[in-house]
Length: 119
Image (cartoon, rainbow, N blue to C red; front, side, top):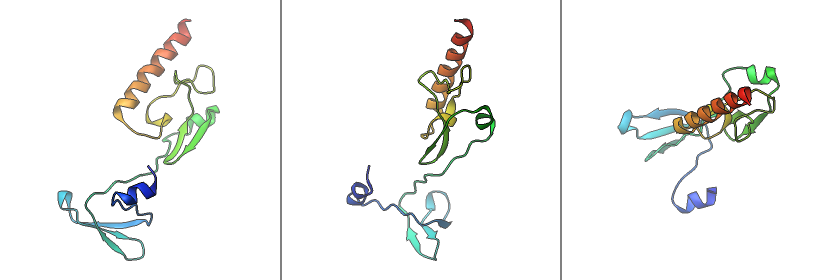
């Protein structure tokens, strides 16, 4: 969805860095932005950047892709990296983070690794 479409729906996308949140839990009421400006909150969605927890993929020579939220390891549909016999799965291979997607990728990658050893 483009920023213009979000704006037409009354949704503000704020690019300024957040300094503080005011309120607690369900009573979260406003956000303080860099520069001292404060904005009221009805909802807050955060697009946090991620990072790889290990340099193993880089040291092995796996291809890394830069996505909107950080680096991911490039794999094919079987979760094979560009290196024969090296598979990757979970949040490390995709930008959208989800327990279900990570689990499914783990199942696919482990089956693919197993098949590569047997066949």
